[in-house]
Amino acid sequence: MIKNLADLTVRPDASLLDTIAAISKGTKQIALVIDDADVLLGTVTDGDIRRGLLRGLDMKALVTEVMNPNPTTASLGDDAQTVMVEQLSRMIHSVPVIDAAGKVVGLFTDADLVTPDEITTPVVLMAGGKGVRLYPLTKDVPKPMLKIGDMPIIEIILRKLKAQGFKNVFISVNYLGNIIEEHIKDGAWLGLNVAYLHESQPLGTAGALGQLNGKLDEPFIVMNSDLLTNCDFRQVIRFHKKTGAKGTLGVREYSFQIPYGVVNIEGTEVESISEKPLHRSMVSAGIYALDPWALTLVPEDEYCDMPTLLENIKQQGQRVSAFPIHESWLDIGRHDDLNDARNNIEQWLN
Image (cartoon, rainbow, N blue to C red; front, top):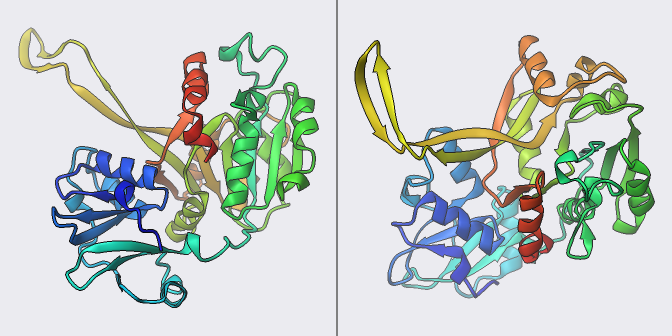
């Protein structure tokens, strides 16, 4: 039982942004909403937040708008193994433990009781790009091999996949691909089965997938190999299957503030003035789930990017779903991003 709950708890006046921070810091995919007396008011999971974001809530919304006010709980003195075996059959992965007064005293979690089951779902890491924005660092080293601490970015990704139970990985390589292959090899030393998709020329963010047409028989994950994230990819594939989509796009909120007053004009008349408005958009997070059928739309050995593939799926009358990613996420595309990752090593190597 986890007893130190300081990083897992929030008050009812906490925002979704505060709650996301607690979930990320607590690393258990759950936050506990408690009052001033530590009495449990509700729980919030990744899924609760994602559903809130999909129905239009913003990051300033109160946690009470998404929390489950009647969560499954255990009593002080209950056997953790017995509780979790029963709850796992109901797809419940964390159970707060409360005393007679309703105060939270601990948390049962499947992560402390069981080893993740191996997952057959294939994962494709796209690692063929030149990383030109990171020159001169990428002149002699492919971007996925740039190090965060003592570990290359792509190795961090592979270790996180292994920790979640994934075992079958394809890596697309082109620019300086031999350096990646020499380091990762067949993945056995990481407990993985790694194979390579060799691009004879730059094929974009989806082109290498054409080599897998007819070779996969279940939905799979695709991810850019210059990303660091604590996203649970098991949740991505479950969401993809549940929605019945042929393609799923991981999305992330991006906001920016215009530093001026924005004037809306009709002809010569000023209709309204907004002082330094904040704009919110959902942007691609470089993480996808696809059905094998989607591979029939990718021509082999021809350039194809992922937005084009997803648009082609839609043009075929098939569904493309959005999966909100609120966990820690960093696209290492610029020198500032790389420095950020290196200055926050603990966030990515845990």
